[in-house]
Length: 228
Image (cartoon, rainbow, N blue to C red; front, side):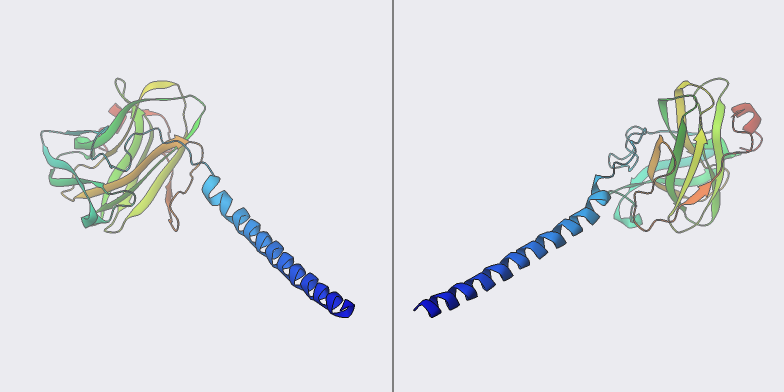
């Protein structure tokens, strides 16, 4: 009996040891996996200064303007255009481009930007066929100072574009917008962001097109009129 008891106890110890090792190994693997996964979910994305940048609320928070020489309708579209984020994308249907690039505009204002702070302005865009538009950050009101203008080339495929710039002054009445006149070519926009700091990708697999502000960072609307 003593031999059998010892044998049974030995076997039980082996079984318990194997269970303990298995549980320990499982816990180690789980901790390792969680350790890898946590950064992807806990990393805080920069706060978007703009409201409704994904157009989930259609055009709420956004303004648009069309010069009398142009004709455009500002809408939102859903699954038809496969939005980058959410259920909608902005759709600008242009039947007459007007006489200048600035004659068709989508923009948001006002908000505050602070002197010496680095900001990134990014958006996704595509067009009916290849065309040019301009994304820009400017002062809303005279003298219409433009801080970060940049011409970008659109195509039939969604692409992300961004500008990173240092704000030269304090401005409590700033505007972020896109101007798209002259050409009679429809435009789609989505996932528009403006935030502090360098560019941060928040969409897996995205290949953004970095663009730089004009050589002279701060200019005025009057000096851009001929180009617009």
